[in-house]
Length: 69
Image 1: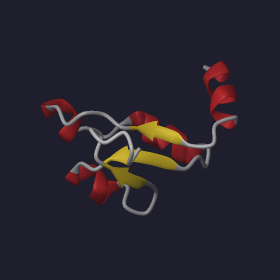
Image 2 (image 1 turned 60 degrees about the vertical axis):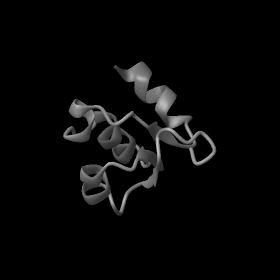
Image 3 (image 1 turned 90 degrees about the horizontal axis):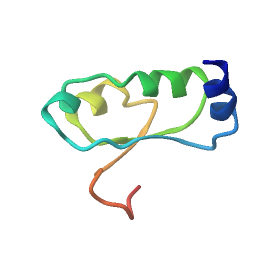
Image 4 (image 1 turned 180 degrees about the horizontal axis):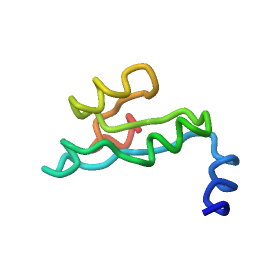
């Protein structure tokens, strides 16, 4: 577990760009909370739940648009 956080400390940005499957649309990704705990900026899929929940903590993109990501 500590090894994961060592890698995260070296990261410039955290990605959580999942596709809008039924499960993802209603989930709250643990990885986003881990990024926030490490003060890492986050790029996330633009799901309505995520837009509302993480509105002040992430940038949002269409997960099917590589240029936006």
